[in-house]
Length: 137
Picture 1 (tube, rainbow, N blue to C red):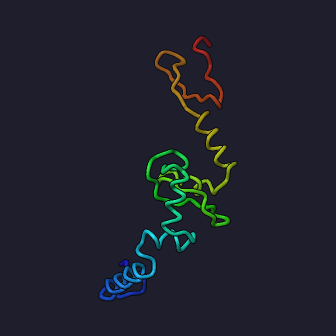
Picture 2 (cartoon, rainbow, N blue to C red; picture 1 turned 120 degrees about the vertical axis):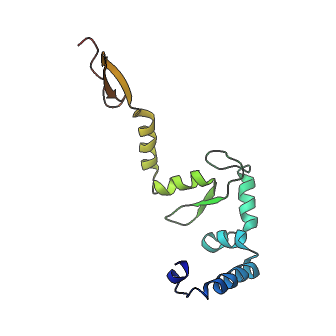
Picture 3 (cartoon, rainbow, N blue to C red; picture 1 turned 90 degrees about the vertical axis):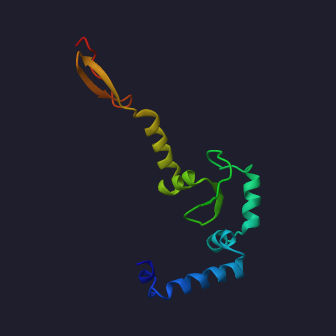
């Protein structure tokens, strides 16, 4: 199936994959150099320097040895190196500080809780959506 999607018949796909790996090895020294250089214009040396500037940790959460280049989706410029989980966040919020701020507000203020309003009767309430009536009413 994979070979068919690439426009290759099954018998030629392994040869194509082998040639691709060999070309990347010859031109770039392997995938670790090829993947960041092609879209972002930086190589392994620059990656290691940026990681050292960050103290060897994810620029967001501080997990050691992050492996993912974060970039601005509008300009394509590299912002830093993040772990897998943190790298997905900015893109999912479309690189918008306003969307991210609304998400933070949401996380801080919408914890729904069950509140007993009468014996055996509960109501769901949230700090941002008002309080349930008092049990005495």
